Amino acid sequence: MFIKSAANDTLQGRAIQSINIRWAINKNFKNWIGTETIGIPVCKKKYAPFDFRKRVSEDGRVHVEVVRMYGCACHSHLREHVIKRYGTRKGWYPFGLWSIKKAQIIARKLTESLNASASSELGGEESSSSSSDFEDNTFAWKRLCHNGRCAWKMKHKYDDVYEEIQERDETE
Image (cartoon, rainbow, N blue to C red; front, side):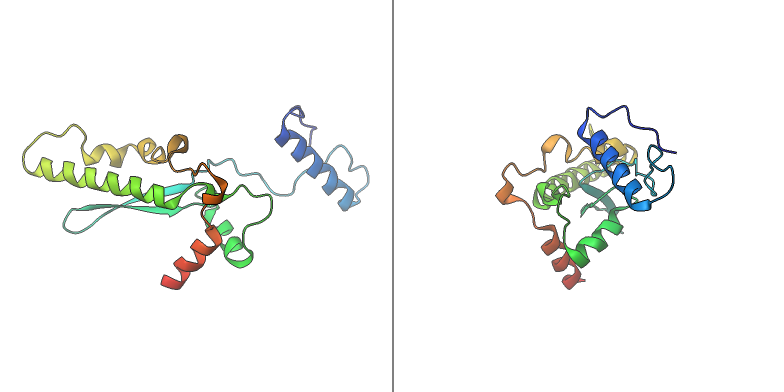
């Protein structure tokens, strides 16, 4: 059952209320006004623009791979299929705001430092940051592009995610 939002002073609260009212008009149920509800649950997962995945090769070298996310970890693949088929929808926040090139540079630096610390540990030297610090601490992985480190500052620089998806599909 829908209860009118107490957060009508926020843009999101007003948007939710307007959608609920619009859905109620289209449903044409008796006594529906005031008990509107969206028929699908709203995702409460956190969005991160990139997923940094660590792979360890057989020789023990670490490689950090960058994957662009189009939603939370549970729903990103669904949005990617929609973008692949129809392009980005009007009104969506631009995914290209976050530069995959900048994220790849950060991942490359992290890969180099992980491999350097792993090789120094094998040589018997003590290292201030071990590779296990990054394995165990998921928070560190999520913060790699934190605080705008991967964001473009100018709109004309934004990545074209539709083109990015098409290129990736052609190479696969």
